[in-house]
Amino acid sequence: MTEGQFKRNVAYKFRIGDIIVGKPIFDGERFAFLELGDKKIIRVNIIGNIVDKYENEGEKRYCFLTIDDGSGQIKLKFFGDDVSKFKNAFQGQTVLVIGNLRNFNNETYIAPEIIKEQDTKYLLIRKLEIEKEKNRNSAPLAKEQIVAVKDRILDRIKDAEKDGGIDKEELIMQIRDVAPEIINQEIKKLLEEGIIFEPRPGKVRWLG
Image (cartoon, rainbow, N blue to C red; front, side):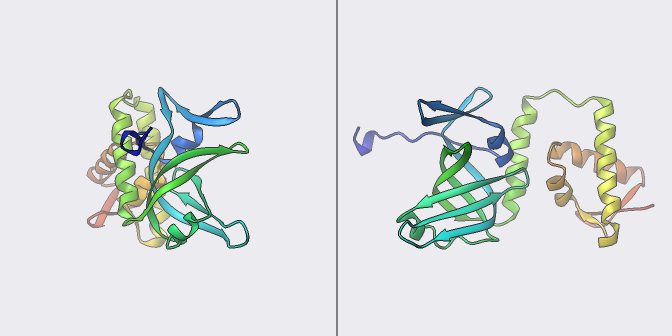
């Protein structure tokens, strides 16, 4: 196959937690793809924070980065000349990563093609984007589930009183398993009921 004929696999947008629950499928001993629902995933596009970096500059050069997006953690692993290629990636950065999935010793990791620094706001944007897609295909929450979500939101707002309140974006990032639209809806109801108030746009506090 010539370079002009080479076709890259689709880089699916995921949160790390979704990748972790996927099932690695092998062709003999070789990793073939990650099975996730009806998708066969080889290449991914994620956004996360670099929370750890380990680099070995010895005879065998390699570097491992640990990426966290609030839903889970996954490693990026690169070797040889790629260590120099990605040398500017450092702990504390928020990055966009596009790369191929690999699996070795029962660990799924990413062999990156691109690591690009991003503004931290893109972590929330990606969460909203993926949750919106999931909600399109899911059933509405039952009344008792909504009540449970409301209680969880209120608990976190009460806990944040010692810090003078909590940003709505932070609430959305903390309550990972609930769609952002539902969280915003319940915050709006709590404001209307006078249980919480908004000292400034985007921040909420308990009125208790």
